[in-house]
Image (cartoon, rainbow, N blue to C red; front, side, top):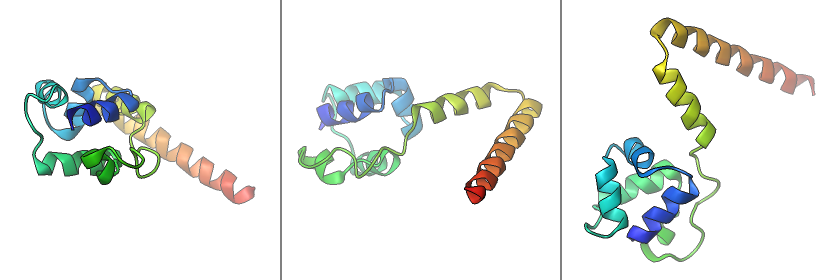
Amino acid sequence: MGSRIKMVRESLQMSQREFGERLGVSRDVISNLEYERVQPKELLIRHICDLYNVNRTWMDSGEGPMFCQEPKYNKMAEEALSIFQSLRPEFQDYALEQIRQLARLQERQGKEN
């Protein structure tokens, strides 16, 4: 299973640290899982499958497609979130308002087409 966890992480283009942080575990935990020094607990396997939209059958056996559909995780979204979190609160407020305005603009343009 460790090799499949690594395949998921690499297909999402994430470091062990990034992958672990989103799961709420350390880089060391991910490393130990990938090198099969420890076996993952059922709860962590379910969390990986839910968070990253991984096909549970594939995770257990390697059979079928890796993902149920396109991965929910998006590298650009992770970058945007990282930048957003680094901003001071007043800039976070401003950035969030800009994103809302872009979403409204996109919605209006969609209705026009």
